[in-house]
Image (tube, rainbow, N blue to C red; front, top):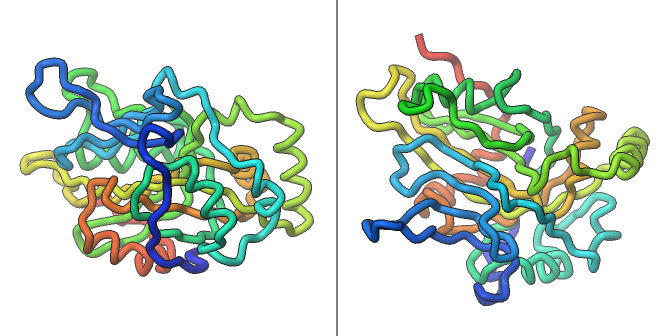
Length: 277
């Protein structure tokens, strides 16, 4: 559910100082932009949906994605429920990690489900294949190369559906077992801790002539800055966790009208998309 959302705000530091930023890879041939990347500490961490908007929606972990980002300054504040998405201390702490830009804070309550690529509930081998089919060269679905969490989906309109994902910067297998177990125990006693993410919205639609289940996929992706142990614990215990999302406006494959609609869409009831017949 959407608890509330804040005012659009300018956050971040100059690009050279930001630990996380998005950028275009330089094309070797000089014929246009290369891959769209999320970069952490100067290393490419994730490949994102390609610029054209007609290629499949994507987040793909790269070999150099080895760093988690968090802020010790507000760790205690995030052990419980955060009330205000515009909390100045939290915004300032995480703004120091991000590139300067306009962000929309969203405060969400989610019940994450951990998904392993190729297994049950995997978006990339399920809903995405139904629309784009298998990769023409590999004959396989797209692969994110990381476990991830599914948290929400809902109808945008008759020809579009919103899918939400929470993506850990490193796999859950890297988490400390003792910390996960401690959160499982506290959640069992009713605690609802808060995780923090920077988020992108990509609206992708296949070209004409693709498989018959043709519609627009709205991919709302939350890249975890803080809360890796909390998300795994919530998925394990089947308990809710709060997620403070700093949605980067203008960084995704979406227009101003799409961003404006997002809070209302995120406040809708969860609904799965009916399969095409």
